[in-house]
Image 1 (cartoon, rainbow, N blue to C red):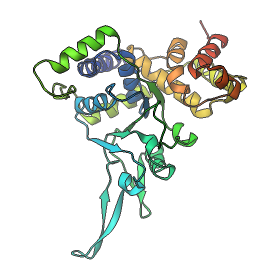
Image 2: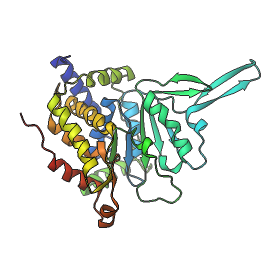
Image 3: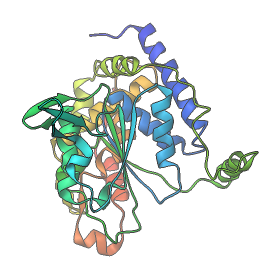
Image 4: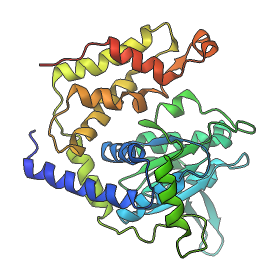
Length: 324
């Protein structure tokens, strides 16, 4: 279906307002904010990689506050159990009945902090929730609130006491976002904002205005899913993913979910631009965050110290994009 122009402009205005609220607390990091908004519109999950202290937790809390959504933070540790994430069923002696205690996963936005510090058994507790939007307790499927989004963080430097995320788990994340150090001017502005008239060591989200309800976000996700994708643009996305499987610089290329991720994120980028159709430039712009966690570099590439983003950028230059 063709999305009415007024609907597209309303969506663009709302996302711009949401961006403004987030950038008010996460100074700088414009691309990080935009990529999180892409995942939100696409109804996907995000893996954020960066060293501590760059505002990963802050931006998630700000996003939850901006649309008045329920927020939960799960600190992943080696002793965290699956029941600590999804909940459990226990027997209530007073009522002689089994009672279900919902875990923190039952929220609109779930921050899985340092997800790679928990063993695979606990990490896998998120699989059903991320893929199906539900969890199963004692054989009973329980729906999660809509919209539902997992934003997981991991530290790329400190690897002691961590468990690498399984490939099946990584594939469930729509985007992998890299958050780096702020620029000189941004760090000055951040330091000035945090130290001005307060003793706290970090910005808070009290200034973020709730500008929508969760059902508003759900309607935007529905609108994004109906953005038009021309067959030639779809073929371009598939060609990029198939090129990762043929590259000698990669030991393993992206699977079919890579193609789906490019289209979903491309649609979200079109909505951010106020368009009802996806362009090849949309696909190219989202290729790195959509694919960098779905491929594995070869041993030779690792030895040469070539980053996966550089390999993917070279592939994007080789795959011809439709221009008519």
